[in-house]
Image (cartoon, rainbow, N blue to C red; front, side):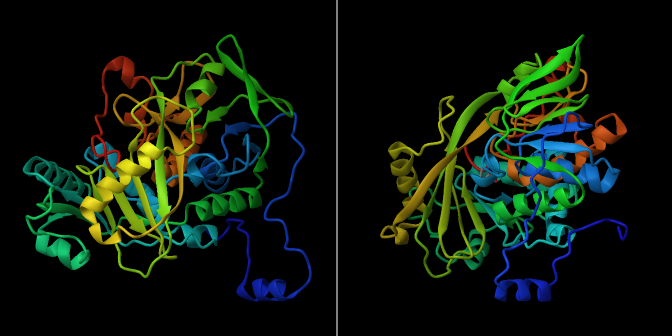
Length: 420
Ligand code: PYC
């Protein structure tokens, strides 16, 4: 790794810059759109930027453009609830997300950028015998994959999250939990900026405010793209979008089995620290973590209908309040500060779609449902390997588009924090 060109920003340089009147140096340069690139990546979120970074760092492929319709991180990457974990149900899912957790663990050092990863532990509550059985199943699969994950008792839960009521008084009593110590939260925008800065330093051109308008396909092969800033000739296009994945793939004549649903989230005013781990309750359709600033970040299940709306709804807030107060009645006086939504591209088996498509040269890294952000590093690394080596590697092989034809679906029921 010593030959890797990485941006260097020493503490001394940072301090002197902070006290000087000079403008801050640009983190990456604006480039004119070239008439051709070796690789064009659609989507300037964590997946697109991580792919560009690993293409350059691991394979020396640097003649790469990342096209972003708005600003980097303006889609799912900046709208998720920043949870990182690998306690999935299937062996394929668990080992895939575990590689991401491992990459996240070293990301700050790797990118020389503080991504503020806090491995506070991730706790999924079981409120019934059947959900406790599923937790045991997940724990066993996780352990076989070498992942730190186990079922814990109500008294162990109480030690980790003292505010939870473990008596049989609540309407949904707590029977146990799946406890996953490596899980936690991270600063999602820092992840985006860190990858963008590192990819740009290695030669990637990041084009913000640049909308893809068409993909040029000739005799079944990609030959270029059209954008709001002009055409680009290229033989490799990677769709790394969330929310618009099916519309963009349709430009290359590729139909994806995806429906797009909003996922809403909300954040409270900050309060003194009282919640260390991430808490999830499938039965109550909610999850919560406390940021280092003291705010509580809440989420729920995806909206029960397809839509491209990223607005919050009153229905969500009232439902969320009802569920959260079942779990944490003491916070009834806290005020919500903000709510928002992100778009989730849902596949029938709750697994992503990563790999080549029937259009030669057109690749997808899509279908990220409610689990895209946590997969950014491993998806970027694996997609970069696939482009460089000409075929999908072991970790992404189970997630190919052809599984819907072959009937080899992944059935990842541990995919979302709640809801399915
Ligand atoms: O899968 O951990 C998860 C998650 C959290 C929010 C949405 N999905």
